[in-house]
Image (cartoon, rainbow, N blue to C red; front, side, top):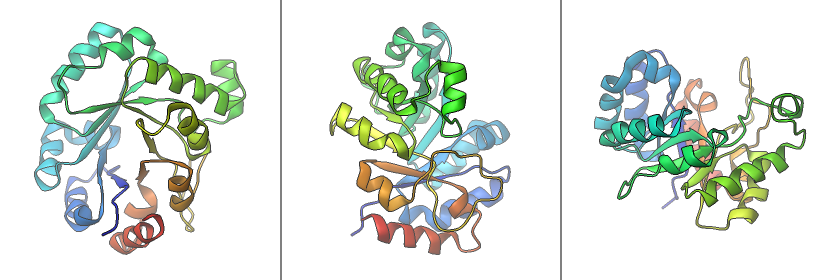
Length: 227
């Protein structure tokens, strides 16, 4: 049996389309990612409809606030039992530590540097043109503050895996296949097979699957390359 490593991103403003997609793909994915577009359109009512079909949900809200607010926010969303949720590592040590709730089964992942950013942008906003160096620095802080893993681009996977070892989750967006994505805003990308070989645990894939006329066929083909 193939190991399921793909998390399909439900970036849609159509709940009907999302439900149909989840029913179609649920047996061949690790889970589904709910982010801003879906969540701000349908909230926890939409979340619960997806959860009732497939309870393996990555609730990707990229939380960023003062520690007390983060702590209370995480406690509030835990009742919805997502597999993963996200906070920004750049929020600082205390904020990261505040996100860890005892006896919670939800894994807290730290967002390092968005895959839409290139070295020009990181130089401007983080005073560091070497993205890999910056991501390694963020990742070390995430592990030190007891987060369960990180979200990073394919370009940084091998450096991070060496830095943190095996017992640290790496979730990787920016996954692309042969077909071009219209209006692609991802700058640091890789194909599924290479990303897994570099050390990613899970791949977040949206448009290459969800924009396809045959999403299940595309997903199955991806799965064949990464077992």
